[in-house]
Amino acid sequence: MKHLNSKAVTGYVTILVKGTAPEMFFQKCANAGISVWDVKKRDTDLCEGNIKLSDIKQMKHIRRKTIYKITFTGKNGYPFLIRRFLKKKPLVLGLFFSVLLFFFLSNIIWEVKISGVPKDIEEKIDKQLVSYGIHPGAWLFSLDPPTAIQQKLMKDVPELLWAGVDQKGTTFYLEGVEKVVVEEADPKQPRNLVAAKKGVITNLYVSKGTSHVQVNDYVEPGDLLVSGILKGQVVEDEENESEERQEQAKELVAAEAEITANTWYEVSVTVPLEFNYEEITGNQKKKYYLKTGEFQLPIWGFGEPDYKEIHRESNGNNLRFFKWELPIEIVETILSEKTYNKVSRTKEEAIEAGIDQAIIQLQNELGAEATILSEKVLHESIEHGKVNLTLFVSVEENIVRVEPLNQGD
Image (cartoon, rainbow, N blue to C red; front, side, top):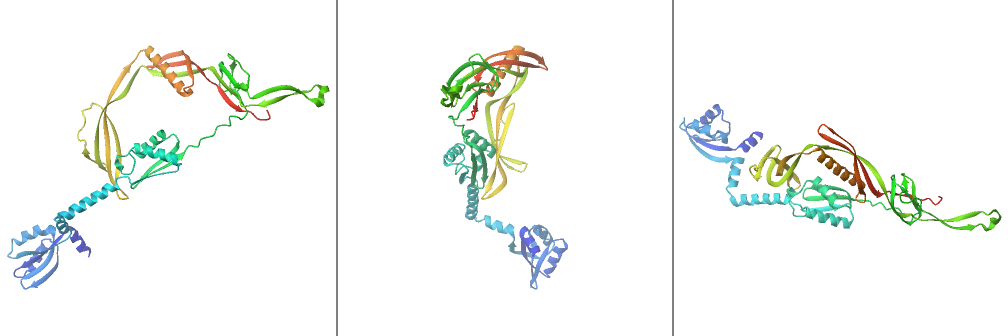
């Protein structure tokens, strides 16, 4: 059975040999190394047998040296089956377009599932996904990688604490975790206001509470700025009038105030006198490949662009057939023109750039509400082509920190 199966794969023919002692012809073939099987004597001068398709040429060479007549009576195996199938053009075209249709349907998104978030956030995520091109009917290999989609969602949907992106078959899955909004302390809860940093008070406006500082006072971290304890009128203790004991009625409130102070920071920066930077000009070309393993076949965008320097960025998506992921990728490569620029600057220019850098760095740390008042260079030095700066920066900012007030205080 195995013998016949192997011959069916490579193909074999049945031949009818006519002549005196026709079985001798098959013997000559066997002696020449040709595989012969199922040899049957049909008549005194007729004999039939099978030989491999690949041995036909050698068999014909042997026949030319004899007087036997050869007739092909059967063609068997897959090569002949495929040949007969290919002759039926309507069937071949129908099968081809069916496979093409299945391939097409296996590489588009049929469904987008979002889970783990409330309905309102789900609608917002769905809207963002549509803007990214992720919707039923979109090509799978035209999508960004899951990590890139995740980063976009985290940026565009601030209500998300985490987002997991996955694609299985023709379904796109997104699982999100909503941010837990920590409720602020009850604004009516009694509290004091204390200093969060050391500085000199520049502005003071108390709307609730008792002020313990004034403008131009110097404060240290933890110093009491505004107390939430309001003292009432003096009331005499009627039962102990002789001892003249008094007590003050106290009212506890949530202290409120706008307090800014002049604070100071020491910032160190290093600025090179010479530096290189890379710039993308905006000119680009896209190329597409079919990739399997290490082999890439260009399918669109042939040739290299006429750029002196090229920045390459590639994204690949595997093709799918039904639920199976094929070992073939559609790879999009973006070739962008880039230039390298070398810049030299004087010591004064480097110092100016260092001051700007320090101010931006400090402003980012303190937030937009803080105001940079002034800066002064405390120390400067040049080492190994770099300017080292130490700056003293004066800032006006809110220094208030809330401190809950216990009822027993």
